[in-house]
Image 1 (cartoon, rainbow, N blue to C red):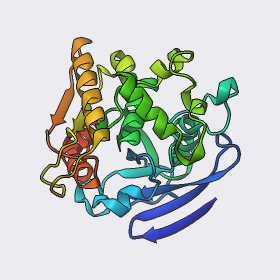
Image 2 (cartoon, rainbow, N blue to C red; image 1 turned 180 degrees about the vertical axis):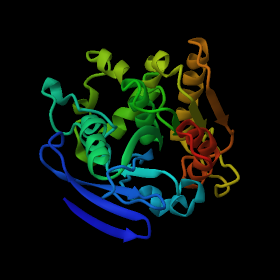
Image 3 (cartoon, rainbow, N blue to C red; image 1 turned 45 degrees about the horizontal axis):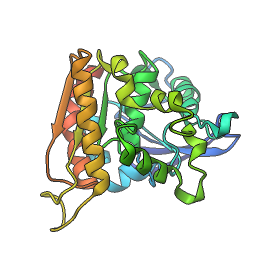
Length: 289
């Protein structure tokens, strides 16, 4: 495995993945003060931070101040590659499965690797933006006990909300010339697969966890240029409201929402929301912010 020190406290791992057909993909670690992976007795609380569609494992450090955030100096931050539009899923591939299996790579292969060789402990939280917000909710719901809390910033929280939402995510699935039905199949014929990847339909599995949901309404906000508009953010806003209502209906005890009104699908909001959610996320890890 290749290991590259890219900046102070930033290390990139090149990981060969069976779940991804033997391909090698990158994972960026933001390491805590005093981190020494050779010390097998030390295990750090771990903060998984997931990128969105059309981004990669460098997105969070390139676009936000995460590497300069003092409250993250006592945790191991894991920023894995998840594909340009991988959707944190083991793809259906017309019933054949196989490559890419992003969920298996992250929750099985990478988790074990980090715990074995890179000082990761078993106390974890997960957060992400947009596609990664959906991934954070899915991983927390689909892998009970793996994460102690989850946060989604402008996340795809209920892709089956309505035809507009379904068509929009199919359009995203089709990025880079991909066959959109490879991911979860047809939304009608493979509806069970879709529901199994829709946080709204997994709300009962999230009800005992601290959950943070935030989203704008797609109109120009204080961090936007005048006249900016985002139909994607408006759609995800409706989805997040639906998920929040469903979480309350099923008895969620630790739900925090910040539906801040005006705001588009942009990094300045996601950086702000990361900071806003850190007390909850770090608190779940028992780490002082």
